[in-house]
Picture (cartoon, rainbow, N blue to C red):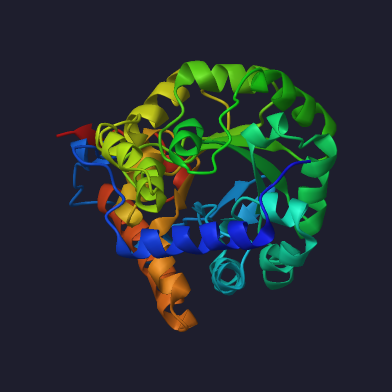
Length: 347
């Protein structure tokens, strides 16, 4: 199995963190689409605020909230500190937790520790994560199973990131015949398989192919948040690629459009909505459009990097408060009553 040296991988992972924290990495002229919707206020909700229930279930586990900390990082000491804080916060608040790409852990045993979140998150769903394209670069079902075992994962996510790989200086760009290999993984692993994009969105047609291949759930991971094309352009030393990245500043399928598109064609498939969500009202809109769980990524990163675990906990608490208050404001007492709620309308 060919792979980058550990030092190079570590450098890349740390650069990703720094760029996401310090640079403008959202595409120009592109939004999640959620801003096109608003809730019609209900001045007589006929429910008690303290009885608004935001609990749900995901992967056959009860969750205190319909939230996921989306896959972000791993593979370095700094990433381990971030993952540790995220895991503790997720466990305390009842959020599901995804880890960053585990390619480094599979290829270099010295980085396995940076993904060891289960000891801090014993009860919540934890999602392993591997780039689907690695199935064309030596990864097999056995590597997928190992990623699950390493963190005692409740599910495995294969992420799709074709344009990130094109712009990444050391990217892997052979995406041929992946659907066949995704089907093999889905059949062989002992936990559900999910598939996500990394911020460019999954449409209904692609979702159909993935579901037919055995995917148990879809994370639409739409555009409007972090653009990994822009992230990689900051890492590139090639003037041509940095200039080319500007042509793709508005590339991708907005998150709201992905939710509607996929849910219309696949009403019963579990769906995570991530991609540019920043607060609990965004999450409420995503669920009202048809998502089951709302995922937050870069919005949490700054507080996860901070040494203060209290700041991260307060941010999760605020997002929960915003969701509960939005539900109260439309008279929805549960997540089931929020889903497809007619109070959400286009502006």
